[in-house]
Image 1 (cartoon, rainbow, N blue to C red):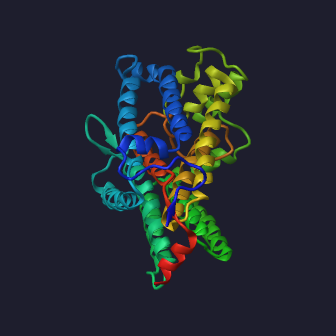
Image 2: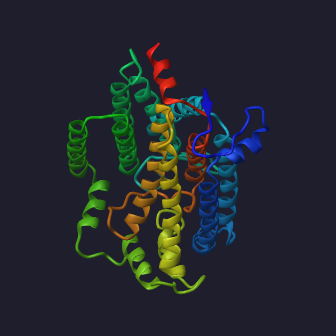
Image 3: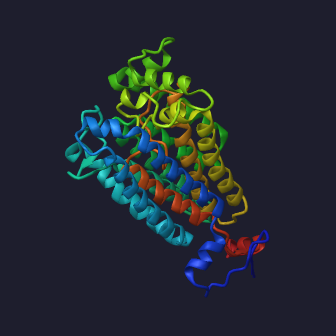
Length: 388
């Protein structure tokens, strides 16, 4: 016996794909994502011309590229959001394996672009950051392993997922990329917690994280420099954090005016890691609150829809993807207002970056696919099926 739950419009399996997708997808989240992409282009118009001038390109070189990347991300998001959960699982596993191999080969074939961390492959016309594509695949694979562990006579999926997480974190730390490593560890912890992890284990993981951070502080000059800058009571006005802090203060409630901001001329990463500083300076607190609201709507609506989901894999994978999306946005904005140490992390769909935008489109497409309204069996049917 199946039923369309919670008052949604029944959709027959034989209906055309697009109407069925439109009736079952979370349209409010989809609209919020499109608005974030539009805001990203708007802020790109303000923040990227100075960088283009410094590099000898046309004024809107980076905006044009961001529009192309955004179009590719939009196609990837819509196509992925049409897939059923079993194909999402396959896509996630295959994507993780490919990204994992690319991540492991970075020390041999990657480049650091002078930033002190080997995170990219240079393709000449563009660059690829494997860790961005690894994150959604890792979450899907972890959710599959932990969901499988809940089955009767299932594999030790929780142990496998922990070993996998530690391996990925180690590879990311070698770059070094402690920000992405923290996101991977956080995502695994969330999925493990939702899957029924004991509190004692999570406390032990937190202690291990603190120990790993202490080790990184003593062994990595790059990491120590960022932590020292964050803990310093005074902000050097000539650093990126100093420029961003001043820009946010100057913007006030309504901003200094479109195109009138100065931080974009001082910050080398104004179009990527510190894009929120450009938004705060030129458009003020109003736009910043609007951006925060959009991220909040997507995350909260995803959680609400996942609470109604009865399939363990779908619930775990969707929760991990929603947390990844929201926490990455929080970290990016938290760095700009100096409540978190600098991590070199983009603002999803708003910051410039091909890998970030396209991988974000795939990840959110997976989330939209997992939160689509679909016929679900009665809970007693599911229990009987598991008991066979």
